[in-house]
Length: 82
Ligand SMILES: [Zn+2]
Image (cartoon, rainbow, N blue to C red; front, side):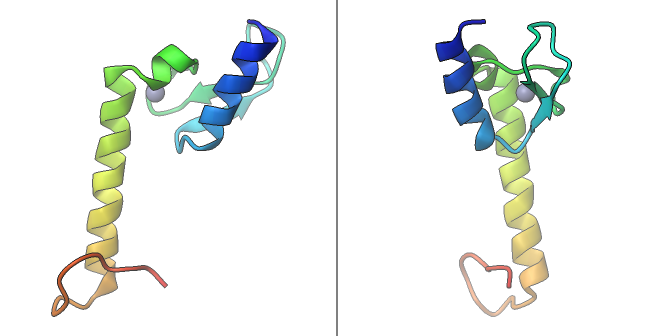
């Protein structure tokens, strides 16, 4: 893996909720592992349909949890966690 690739992947992975940094990668550098899909992350994987769908599902679940744990069903719209 090239250093430029590593940098861009790492930047994206810092925002990815499924990224898990692993020290023992096949590339001898710390590399993010996608624990949702069970594969090493790279820019192609992050953009892959499989990964995007997991992100969407997670986001949906988060919103549902936020809405239900907000507790106030009298309000429409997004509930915010305190
Ligand atoms: Zn993934």
